[in-house]
Image 1 (spheres, rainbow over the protein chains, first blue to last red):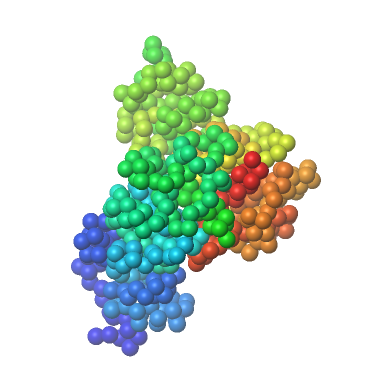
Image 2: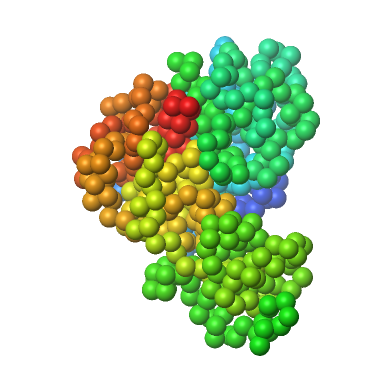
Amino acid sequence: MNEPNGIRGTFSKQRLAGMKRLLQKKYREEEGLFIVEGWKSLAEAVGAGIRFRTLLIVEGAADDAALLERLIRNADESFAVSEKELADVTDAVTPQGIAAVMPMFDPEAALRSMAPEQGIIVAADSVNDPGNLGTIIRTADWFGAAGVVIGEGSAEPYNPKTVRATMGSLFHLPVAHGVPLPAFLRRRRQEGWSIITTEVNGSELLGTVVPPERSVLVIGSESHGVSEEISSLADLRVAIPKFGTAESLNAAMACGIILSHFTMRRS
Amino acid sequence: MNEPNGIRGTFSKQRLAGMKRLLQKKYREEEGLFIVEGWKSLAEAVGAGIRFRTLLIVEGAADDAALLERLIRNADESFAVSEKELADVTDAVTPQGIAAVMPMFDPEAALRSMAPEQGIIVAADSVNDPGNLGTIIRTADWFGAAGVVIGEGSAEPYNPKTVRATMGSLFHLPVAHGVPLPAFLRRRRQEGWSIITTEVNGSELLGTVVPPERSVLVIGSESHGVSEEISSLADLRVAIPKFGTAESLNAAMACGIILSHFTMRRS
């Protein structure tokens, strides 16, 4: 039975264990579900039209009753849990007293919605660090990218560390995960998009490149860069000029620097 | 007794425990020492003229005998340890079989060496995330900054997470830690340096700003930005244009984007 405020009594140990499994990629993929924690991120998810399967709230954690009511209305079911129980199903260092289970985005639908007349799509080739991937999504959002496409070999956007590093941006722009990148890039190229890779030895120095009307900016892995197959598909191989002695830039950093130059140059 | 190759026998449990304490800020500060692990970083430290107090090596971990010999020659004492023992005194996820204890940089000497005719010093006001601080140092190195000055309220450069995130750049440019920032900024201002802050509501949009000859770029904390006192000392308060809907940029990202625009514009 629902209580008057929509919060039910007990979330069983069994269900807690089931939810906790979603901290692992394998189970997230099996069930197509993931966990988001924190008031702000959940508010953004509601704003993005995502309905929650389950909402867990620590008693007394809400200091915005209107927001709490909105989140409960957006959930199929809501439960009161202890702080310890909530900490058990999230991996946050500073848990905020609220978390929800929600469905992943449909990659096909996300890709279809990346169809601007002019703009940049960011593609992650083999970005393995979840925090880096989250920072890429957050930065792509800041610079108004048309979307983020995540290749099969990358960390996934539903990793709790990635979700956290996006700071809510996961819900601001289309994000497609598990995409076979070479096929995606070939298709976009046929449709007139320019493929741009970031390469330490790229032939085009950032600053001299005129950003194309519609482009896909591919970010490679920190250790190996973009794959040879993807490099061979590139129309432009861009290098960020180096003035000092560091061996490389962080992958998310390289992405943000190029996005900033492209968007500021076009505006 | 040293063995012929310079590696001694046993590193006692007591000494292991003493070294492990250096993973904590309190003991690092008391002793003025910190731990660096990994072949590449240690090679960079030698290149920077830093002598090791103690070097620990896992038997069989070296695949470059010449480098190993160079590291041993650079150490006051060297010990063979087990993988488990080494893992115990480092917090690396993928330990590389070698680590050393070395002295911190003298902040005063580091500050004195930041004296170019033209250039940028990066200052961290209250950058609390060790990884972010490391990325700032690495990026400052890439763009040829004159040095990195770290305020009293920030994470410190000798945190193992920071050391790792610098990817060796900690040994490439002067880094001064624990600096009272307002006094430092006032002094530099008197000497003709421009003080630049990054602020979400900054009056100068990046892209329209002409970088001054000599400037200190201050990066604030992610949650609160630069302090009021420091903002009041700024000659320029720079904002990075936003084209999308993210609420903010990661502090290291903001630093890298501004450095890239300033250095590329000047070159």
